[in-house]
Image (cartoon, rainbow, N blue to C red; front, side, top):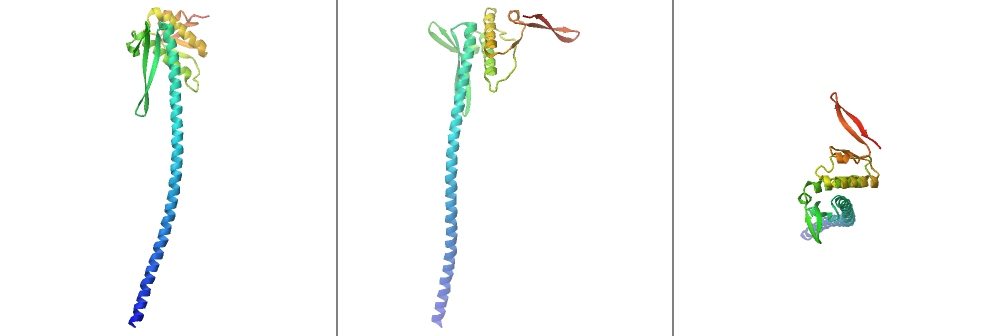
Length: 220
């Protein structure tokens, strides 16, 4: 009896461990299957991440290229304005830099005096006239180069307000060139008679009985 009892007890113990092993084996197989799925998902994630990184790099390059294109166009137009108004010794330079992840730009006027180049901030270059012309040219450049194209006339309020009388005529010639080049009408709001004399049409705003009215002074 003792032997039978011992064999019976041993069989129960063995059976118990076999059942437990089988359960653990099933859990192990399930975990291995889940691990395999996770590894597949991870591989797909890595491939997608690599693709997104490549797309991001392409976007960054395109953005850098676009910034460089805009920089070149702005420098060209503003330099042309400075040289038409003040002479060939002047040029306009934009320096791009990265502040963290945000691109920033600084503006400089470069003057060539007897073969020596002097670089200054616009506000430090010959007073307000330089700043006026740069501001005028930048506004025109942004309006004329932005895509999609913004239609309609260019409306300029008191352009070249601080430009001395000696440089008003070449400033007007620059505006006429812009009008012809980009096919845009330019409307000036000004008190400067030198500007009105060069206009194709001149209207005067008069106050009559508390109301403003337009009076045509000259026309082609």
